[in-house]
Length: 226
Ligand SMILES: [Zn+2]
Image (cartoon, rainbow, N blue to C red; front, side, top):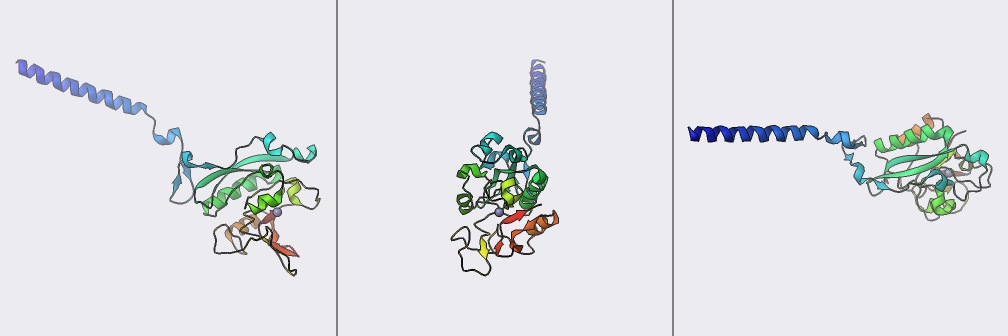
């Protein structure tokens, strides 16, 4: 009889522990409730913990030191963008741009990520002391850069340059160096644009003019909107 009591006690303990274990497990939310994984549009899924942060400025930091008048600054917005960089890791950068093309820029970055088009970095030009030549030489993608050149769409954030080093400005009929200097175009390299490229077509579909069609030079990294 005592032996039977012991066996019953043992079963009770096991049942109690099983119940306790299962109820603890139920209280733990599934992983996706904590932090949803980032879908890149391919089979690979990036963990938010592994995203490389290239830029995390406040708006005030992103416009610090610019000579642009308030009338232009009022038109600007700073947006976070996510892209696959040349190290093939997913990065988070920022684009300071005009509110008029904010949605286009957001959706084009999503489009580029989904199409596995590499963008090396996207950092507001304040990080280059407002020197767009340094920014271009660093293959940085950016939109707003105020210069006293009234015709430049960058002065109002209505243009964006994508991977300038991979898509250098090339003169058509003059023997002048590419910009950035020393940059060589190789259309087999991911991040390089050419006529018919899906990223070029996406910009055009949204009403952007591509710098490749300029009269004096092919400005392959440049897209602008009226
Ligand atoms: Zn440009």
